[in-house]
Image (cartoon, rainbow, N blue to C red):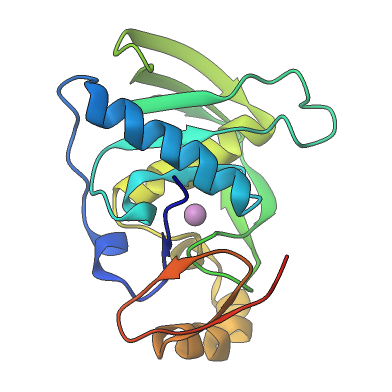
Length: 188
Ligand code: NI
């Protein structure tokens, strides 16, 4: 089921999400809907709070990007970053902040402890685009958006856009959910 994406000004995007205690049928259903919603919106990653569930759960699929075709879709539950390495700048965007892009500096590699779709514990190293998207999505579980991490100069440029999103003017090619929203949906 395609779920509407919560937009910038929504409170749920600012909350600290709760850990999962296991994977039951409800969680499996949510994961399937998250993959469907993410692909429908052409996103690379999606965190549960973005679809209205304040849970420490995210999905990721980079296989639509060149050089990442062999990358398997991932379900990440209760992630915890054990270590970070290096630093890199990359332009980011977010399905919850449509129409806004900006450079964000983040560690270029991470060691992550998490539980997979079977709730089995994994400890893995990630780098490149995977590390980037993982960190962006993990931020969502802690109430942080990429625009919070942008430098002052970049933030000034997007100030008007953010204000208009906060006032409910949303221009997105996928279903969105926001309080008092005036959604203008473009056909994709
Ligand atoms: Ni995002």
